[in-house]
Length: 640
Image 1 (cartoon, rainbow, N blue to C red):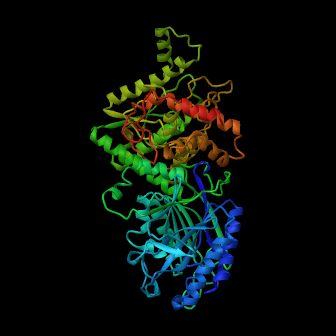
Image 2: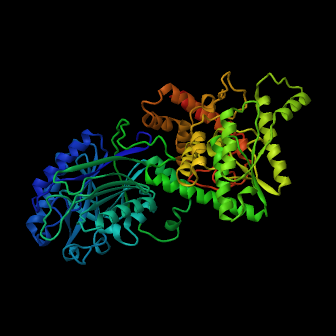
Image 3: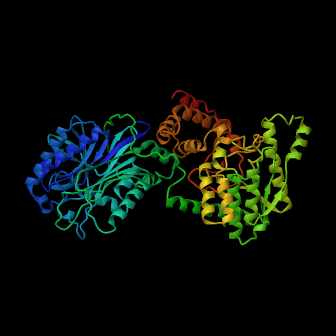
């Protein structure tokens, strides 16, 4: 596999009812087309060799004999292809007829999976012709001159890729075979289907496929019958769906009169990581007896990396209406967490240090919403601006304007004199703008916030975000510390959108203008004096790298345990045209170096609400020794 990706396809051929040899030519054509496009595993609809709508013709020996003959011809004629194919065909097993999925590769049939649940209600009549898997008398089936496994729990295996198969109605029952197959190790489920169209059914089907892929922590390839099936009473639209762990990656065009090939890639490495992390995943398997099934090896043809699925450069930020919904939900979580802490601590006020930057602005907005929810007067929120040596007029003006427009209490406490006195006390030259110069200011500010909170019987609300915690971009026991960190699991790239969402939806015009200007201000700790024009001189992203890259690295590293090589592979595709390879390697190296070096800061973080799937809380999601070495990760980057 290439970084864990397996290229799969849901194929929807044109068929003619009961014309087996016409149908296999269409199947072969799609197989060859898929092979040229790098597909490794391809699935066809239920009973695609004969077509699904043969009805009582399934009782005819002529159809069944020619179906088996056509199947063998298809297998033989595609012996030169490397891809694994799964097609639907009626097969005779002793005195029983089964609705079967047949897996074959390189001219060899590997195994047969019988349908387990046969619908016999309303428009469905399968129980009239077929025998369900539970009632089969044989565990092997003769096809041509050899016998192959016949088992509902058959799993095709190649290294970490384990393919399980179910057929149409199997998905619609309370406990689908795919649920058991997943607990037995299958991480890629193939469904051969012939589901007719009804009003509203398609939306339900899409939800069902996505939900089952999520429940099974698996990839799911769904191929359903299309144009050419009999329209005596039913219409088949040709649904091809590919999903991965709850996300729909690709789908076919419905009601197309042409054949279709729906292609995407399943990330097996990500799925396996999620299963390892989710230790409750296999508890159902361990707690009950199941059919152990049959494991059949197959070969996965190697393909050079050529992704058709999109790699989102902003994995923390959805688009469209989903972004609005996410912003609203995040604020609800933050507000609920802070409200509980304020009540529990019997706090009479909240203290927030306001710099005129994004993070402190978000913390203030959360605090204002919390006080509104608790029906507490906003003036009990103390917004403190603390001008220092690097504070610019723009950030100072925005900080004061925002505090006033939101109805909080504004206090201004300059830290310049206190820091100069401190430099004198410790013997530091104030003209030397080194780490001591910078961190002294951050710690002075934190001391002021803590002391004012004591005076006002309040809590200091932390402003640091997830991205800063990942990089260690915080002064230890300075802005690193608070009494409750509301932004601790929010990545920097999302902070801007949260602020803009409030600007557009929650505040008056004066506050809106200030918020939008804050969102447009360069990110800076403002600890170094401004340039000769009074503009920000110390820009964070010039020093540690673009936050959009670091958030991308962080997401794939923590969410899926991805290696540096894989993250680099994904980043090249996600940021193609924006960053060259040398720049990506540089900042990837910086990310891992800083992430490992700065763990000691994360080991003693204040409390804060978990908002998304990634958190660096030492009490929950991320527990790492403070002295772990980055050697293996950095060497991998250097070898790229």
